[in-house]
Length: 319
Image 1: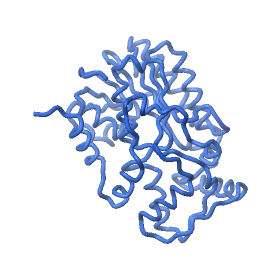
Image 2 (image 1 turned 180 degrees about the vertical axis):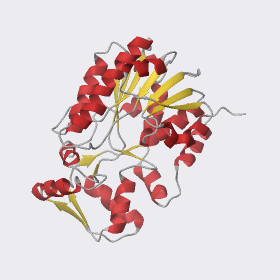
Image 3 (image 1 turned 90 degrees about the vertical axis):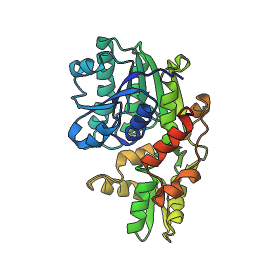
Image 4 (image 1 turned 135 degrees about the vertical axis):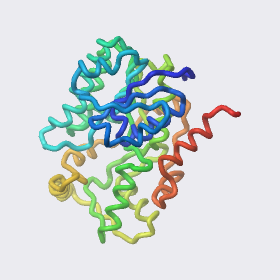
C-alpha cells in the first residue's frame, strides 16, 4: 500500500460509499477532488482538510479531462440501484456511458490508474443493474489503463439502504411481505469496502485485478429482515411471497416515489450475491461481521464520524 500522498479525483464521492471513503482518503493524507452535480448541496464535505468539491458535468469527456489533469488516480464510484424509467436507459447511462467517458478523459489527461466500483455477480442474470455493471467491467478491462475492479455484495453501514431501510419499513408495517425472501446475500461492511480501495491505491500487485468483496456470513433476505426486526425489539411476521406475488409487489412499489423496491431489484435477487474468491482476504482485510456493527448502528450509537475516528486510531502513526 502506498504511503505517499496522492492527488485523487473521485466520482460519486457524495454517495453512500463515497461519503465514507472520501474522509478516509483525506485522513490518510491524500488530496481529494470530489466531482458533484451540485457542489452547494455538499458544502459540509468542503470543510474537510485536503478535500475539494467541484460542480462538474461528469458526462463530458472534455470537462473530466480538465479535472483529471495532474491526478495520480481516478476513483469511479457512481452507480444506481434504480432508474427513473423501466427500459434500462438509466442504468446504461450511469454504468456504461459514464465509465466509457471516464476512460476517454483519463487517456486525454494521461492518467493511468483507475479504481472502478462494480458489483458481485456483475454481468449475470436478467436485471439491467447487473447486466450494465458487467458491460462496464468489460470496458475497463479493455481500456489499457492500470485498473482495479471492486465487486461488493450488498453493503451495510451508517446511512445504508439495507438494514436502515428495512428498519424504517418495519417500524411502519404490521407485517413484512417479501418477494425473493430466500435470495442469498453476503453483506459487506462499508468500512471494509473503503479499506479495500485504500489498500489497492498504490499497490501495483492489485493492477488489472478484480476483487470480490463480501462479508463472513451468508444471509437470506428473510434473515436480514428478521435480524433487523429483532434488533429493534419488534414483533413483525416476515412472510415470503411466491414469485408471482413478489413480482406484483415489486411492480407496485416501483411506482412509488423513491422506488423502495422495483422490478429490476426483483430480477437482481434471482442471482445470489455470494462470492467465491475472498477479495478482502487477498488485500489483508478481515471481514467485519454484521453483528459487530448493525446493533449499534440501529440504536443510533454509530455514525460516520465514529467510523472515521476508529479508522484514525487504527492507522495514525503514534506521536
